[in-house]
Image 1: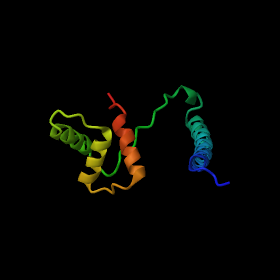
Image 2 (image 1 turned 180 degrees about the vertical axis):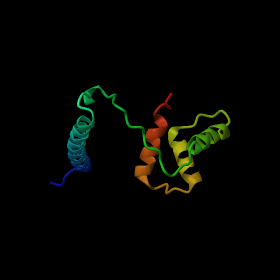
Image 3 (image 1 turned 30 degrees about the vertical axis):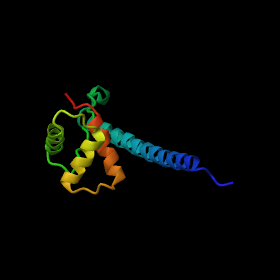
Image 4 (image 1 turned 90 degrees about the vertical axis):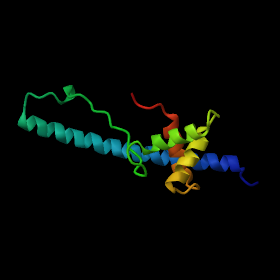
Length: 124
C-alpha cells in the first residue's frame, strides 16, 4: 500500500528537524570548546579572573539583507495606509512587500521567514 501524503510529509519534516538538531548540537559542542580556550587564555593574562562572572551577551537577530534599515516597515505602513481602513492580513502585506521589492513570490522559504518576522512584535 502506498504511503499517504500526510505521513510522507511528516516523515520528511521529522528527518529535516533531526538533521537540524544534530547540526545545532555540533555547533554547541564547538562553541563550548572555544569558550574553554578563551577562559584559559583569560587566566593566562589575569589569574584571578572569574570567567563565569562575565555577563552573557545575547545574540542580536539577523537582519534580512534584502531590505535597507526601516524599508520593510515603511512598505508595510504603505500597504496598511493604502487599504483605507479595510483589514489587511499579514499574508497580503508580505506578498505586497515581496512584489514591491521584486522578490520571487514563489520563494516559499523567504515568504515563511517574512511572515514569521512580521508576526513577531517589534523589539522595544
